[in-house]
Image (tube, rainbow, N blue to C red; front, side, top):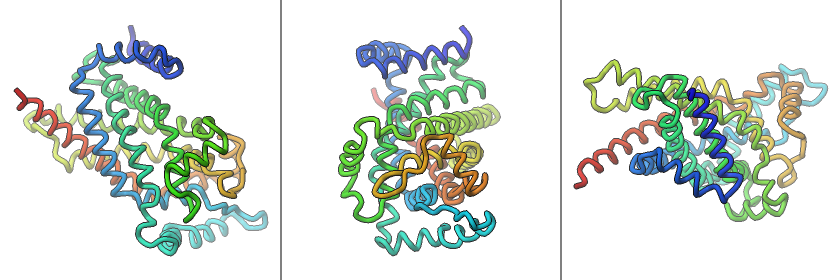
Length: 341
């Protein structure tokens, strides 16, 4: 069977398992047959540690980015030319003004608002993403020890898809808590309670389509490029036992920069759909296409990249830390396994 055939079979089986709980046990057994359980556990632990550490370190920029994506209901007046609106927005709602507003609202601690929700989301997210990337490549690769760039991208795409289907409700809660003004939520549980009251279970999947359109290709490009660069480095330098942290950092930066540039607009649309209509915010968009059209009409194509600077200031170090910590923790766990009698 072709590489694509193996990949689509795995996605279909996983989707059926998610949709029909009665099939979940059979799916798990099928995956466990194909996987080395010890390897899965190492991916889960290393991914979780890497995700929690990276997000906590970059939480302030993540909050600024989400506030700029949300927009705080700032729209261009009909009489204001586009170039004047861009200057106005940069002056009144840019990184410096947003930072000042956050500090005024709650001091230094306010920059970490929503971080617990982010950590609760990112630990399973990164754990599952690294585990699924590994498991998918074990299923589709002609030679699992030497995945091709295409196989690395397919592994990343599949991992991104399955991870987002599982953790998306936590993503929505994280976004709402992070952009909330002081007093809107008493905490994570209160946000979950209010969201459930608003629309039941469906409320937690608001913006899912936009999220998948951004997160799946992002994961494909980021993980695909990183692991392809890593494989090329290992092949060129077989004498090096462990890849230097500086090289891991550089590969993470390159893969994240390109992936963010290609997929950022859909992540902005996701945030707008997640946060509209909550606590007095207007309900402006009927869906993904309507949101894109209104943003481009009001702000031009540049509006789809609002907040990309703080996003890069957050995403680049976060991605680099994820891969550096993942590689180090994974190596440490491998060493422990060797030492164990």
